[in-house]
Structure formats: structure tokens, C-alpha cells
Length: 318
Ligand code: F6P
Image (tube, rainbow, N blue to C red):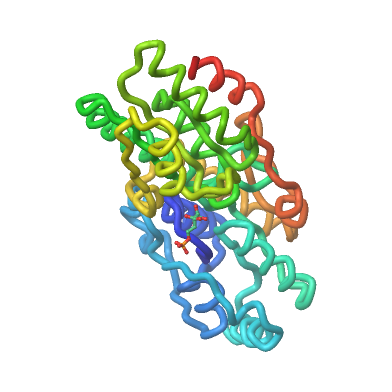
């Protein structure tokens, strides 16, 4: 199943799981709409041929949902009944930390084998350097910011560009560095609004006529992106300020080659772990090796921003 927010590469992961099952002569069944579909028994038999031509497609052919029903004991009991009735013996959950929390609880209650594949653009999961969709979302954000820069520079404007990431600043920091942003505001490092004003003043003094400030949606400055723009307009009237919120465009589109390859590797590993009798593990990438971490650790572990990249970003915005 795919669960939670969709991300580019989910289809490639479905394809990989199904093809690995076919390779090992195991039947596979797709569960529609995540845990919602599991509770309702909304299943489809999948074969190696059912997943032709989806490696390059964004979104998820199995659809996705955030399920309120599965948070209840009754919901999970119904889900277990559906799995038994359909003779399903193990489950691969492609999703983010919310989906993994559900998987852990379900395993504790019903001892049902489950392996997680991290699929979210936010990259906020411990135990993998990259979640599926993160690389594609970064490239989408950078492409969008490049385009916004054309207008910023033609009109000598300052743009505040909000990117996704929930409570994490990975997309903001990496897309900000990649697109050459003048300032990057992330939740992990709240340097205060005064510093931003100072930095923008300095930009003007040193001859910059336009600027881009990338703001993570989870930024902790205490102001949303529109309030930030207003604050700068009030304090630095010489700036012509605009706001652009990139939003869900960052979740869509054809996955990058990196995400397709990652999905293919993680899907095979997920199936092989289940065939080895393993459960409650999340597959991930560390130092370009496919590894596994306990799902509980992956959820609890938290995520830390790369300090070296933060330092590079500070130097680049000089
Ligand atoms: O987790 C992926 C994500 O796109 C976050 O970056 C964002 O905060 C959230 O999902 C948006 O969720 P929804 O699509 O439910 O509005």
C-alpha cells in the first residue's frame, strides 16, 4: 500500500515490490487508499505485467489517504479480518512517519509482518539519507525558484518563496542552496527576524538589486510567509516584495532517475526481508548502501540538518 501524502517514486516502489514478488514466486495484492482501503478490503491482485509503464509516473496508482479509521481499535480489527480473509501474510507500507506509526501499532496488536519503505518529499525520516520523492521535489522546487528569479531580477524585486517539508527544513535548505537564495529560513535554525533584515540591507548595500528568500513551511520565526513579507515591506520600504507559495506542485511530476533507482532498490530489499522472516523494519539508504532500521527507531530517531551544508549556505549568502 501507499499511505499518507503521495510522493514521486511511489509507483516505482510498487513496481519493484510486485516484480520482486513475481521473481520469488510470491503473489502480491495492492491495497487501495492506504489504511482506508485496508479496512474496507479494497484490494487488487497484481502481477509483474500490472505494473508496466509506471516507473516514470508521479502520484500512486494505488492512491493514498490519511486514515482516521485505522487510528481506532475497531478499524485495525477490521483491517486484520480483511487480511486474513484474503490470505495476505505480510505487508509493505510505502509512506511517511504517520503511516509507520500505524504499522508498528498494528504489528504489536496482531503480530502481522510489516516492512516500511520511506516515501515522502519531506525527507524527515531517520534511518535513510533520502526518502522517496525528496530528490524529485528538490529538483521541482529549484526549477520553480529559477523561474521566479527571472521576474525578481527583471523587476528588482524581493521574493519570499515558501516550500513544503512539514516540520523539516531539508527541502528549503537544499533547494535554497541549489537555487542560490539570498536567505533560507528553516525550522531547525531560527536566527531571528533582525538577522534577516540586516542581511537584506547588506545585500542592497553590496549591489544586489533582487533577492530570493526561501522559507520552509515549518519555519519557526513566528510569522507566516505573508506576514514575513509585510514585516520586510514595513521595515525596508525600498524593497518591492512579492510572495510565492510553491505548494503541492512539489509533490507531483515524473520521479527523477535517483528516485526511480532508489525505489527499485528499496522495493526488492523490502520483499527479501519479508521472505527472510523479518518484520518491523524500514528499508533505507545510508552511504549508498541499502540498509534496514527498526521502524520504531525510524519514527523516534528524529532528523538532523546537515551542519556542513548550513555553513556552506551561510558563506554562499555573503
Ligand atoms: O508530507 C508531505 C507534505 O506535502 C508536507 O510537506 C506538507 O506539510 C503536507 O504533506 C501537506 O499535506 P496535505 O496534502 O494533506 O495538505
